[in-house]
Image 1 (cartoon, rainbow, N blue to C red):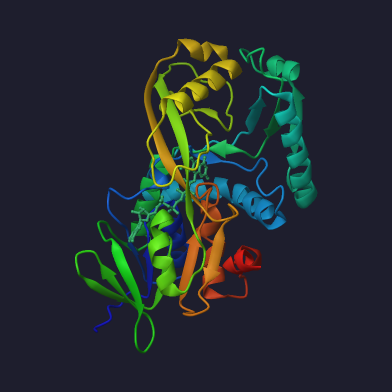
Image 2 (spheres, rainbow, N blue to C red):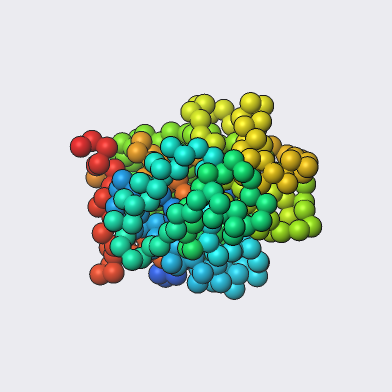
Length: 370
Ligand SMILES: Cc1cc2nc3c(=O)[nH]c(=O)nc-3n(C[C@H](O)[C@H](O)[C@H](O)COP(=O)(O)OP(=O)(O)OC[C@H]3O[C@@H](n4cnc5c(N)ncnc54)[C@H](O)[C@@H]3O)c2cc1C
């Protein structure tokens, strides 16, 4: 087979694949991204847009450190994306709250934050507030709120514009993105590299392959010798009509999109590949939002949707080089928005195995067989 000149092919053009593409392009590689079809499950098109650290990795220090390294890189990463794409992706990183209406849940989360702090030392600083302290700080917080935690480094972004900006940035850096390019098979080629078969029968040769196809990676990972079992986890979200006034806080479950609507979310369910929304969950979300900020009771909900998270067995990222084919990599995670600045920089060093390569041993898939 005639191999085209593409040096690295990334399978999957969501937030993760595109971020990785940026890093590899910056490192001077020729990169093409093959992205699937509209009917694919796409977490990058249905997420909550948080750039979030609170609680992450409380029970797994490498993930806590990785997340906070990403948060530190977000301001510069956001500016660079805007420079490359010409788009405002509405990054705001002025701190965020976790609100609680149940005292036991609040205590449990405070314990998790204490563990996280033990992993991170003075790199992270959070505050624990009583209900009255929160009400003293933010006008309009409901009486049902028993307390909150606050971290200065948390923030959010417009997720759809982030996705678009990443596409434009990859193109601006000289990368090629092909849409409707559903890869059905990846075969190691004689003499090195891989042959990729697309759904339309086209064959593409590549030197290295990076599998970042979200839930679509499930079907291809075995071809390359990966053992990680990726699973879907459904989240449901609501969005309200656009409001003229600004919501006076950002929280992990309630945020105001830059265009004005209030997005409400944070649910988790195992529902297989079913991404539909359900009335009882929607009602629960609305109830929670009104308990936290009662003025929302008068705001109309205009849209609701479900979307599937891309979860590894333990919920932490997987950065794995295939044991069977050393030029094949699996890169997959939840929180791909938060981690984007690292995927677009440090991860390229790891793939290239440069002297600056981070130690990502803790994220290898061999942890699942231990
Ligand atoms: C409800 C919800 C809320 C979330 N909130 C947040 C949040 O607030 N903050 C945060 O950091 N993260 C959040 N996430 C997680 C975040 O959205 C994901 O980590 C991220 O979008 C994953 O990106 P991805 O590129 O791996 O996967 P996807 O976005 O699913 O992209 C995979 C891509 O691969 C393509 N593909 C699939 N199969 C093939 C194939 N065979 N050939 C070629 N292409 C293929 C698909 O077409 C798709 O474009 C949330 C997720 C959900 C569902």
